[in-house]
Image (cartoon, rainbow, N blue to C red; front, side):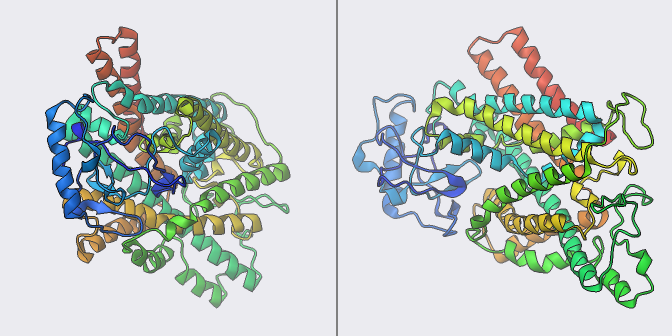
Length: 559
């Protein structure tokens, strides 16, 4: 296989109609001779629809000729370019992944995409929006209302700048043609195998962390859905035993009197009822429901192709829009309840400045995390000169969305009679399972997460098994062991640490340390130093960003 330094994809022109590949990547090229193909080992080739695809002997022979041409001069020298007759057919061309796999796509683009700026902005917004949005109000409560809003704005600006540095990182390498590179390629160029392995590790941390959060949320949503159905059938009002506001729009404090952890099975008022006792025994959020999900999701993780689940990605957008609608309606019904106390807490209100604000920065690191795939998303932009502008607009919209959800939930939380400390790490837990609007929201999110979860498992399998064994499906045993470990981690956390805010902030601070803070800044410093353009202000600024990333991770263990 050709080295990264002299490897470039060669993709033939196709029909005018461009078909999107995985992750909405479109491919189309108008300059055939400026590209050079490379040969991928058959065991390393994966495809969304066909897991293993063979490379013909003819393509292998052509690859050897390309190697010969590439050795005659440097990759940047266009004097000796492989002639057209050694170019493989379109069906023999693949897009290489630095983690050891290649995706067979139908067409290619670099600056000739079909996506308008509006579509690109929406794609970035939709990709960045995730389950972190459920913990934003809790994060604001931990930081204080005023501090929380400031932290969201500052983290948005900081992660945007680091993402900008990621986008510009390829252009800092002048000696090579980097148009087909992804960010891990850039990391490997500057840091060698360490960059490759560390990027793999951070990517796996973010994937597995997200899967653990998803398992906790699925247990939560499934439990509340079953509880809603049971209470509806038996005409039970599940808010009678909980601290709540007493009106037609109940808001509850499930952690009241439970040591800060939600009471998962609060039906004590009805303990004399045998049916309720049996229901509580077999339908517990932390003791039974996480295990029920194993029988449903573990078989789905073993599928060789995730193409079926990728059809439901639109549910993510629907879920976020519904959450915005739900929060807006609840805020109108409840009104605003705010008092400003800068340093001293009161019975019902938290101070505006709290030293637990790093918990919010940890959550936001993952909430604003898109750095590992931003280059791929922007490749589809029809007007490449608008990439920076579109990225800024997308980050602005994401920041406004987080502010809107967080501020409305915090401000409308009814204090008194409830304390702001009652705001849960998943703000939907502050609405009883009998609430119709919350029930619909949980159903949306449950179905969305159940379709996304196998996709995340597939990505983890591609990255880990493909990297270790050169095959994303080495055997049923290998895949089953990996999936059991991932599912087991989710079950354990759902049973013993069902705190999505804590899981999000730890995994976000860990994976963000490398992808968000260290690599973009360090690559920029190295490139400026190589060009003899490094100045003390730039050095100090980017070293400070690295220090902030380290402090963000360390602070999570002291909060």
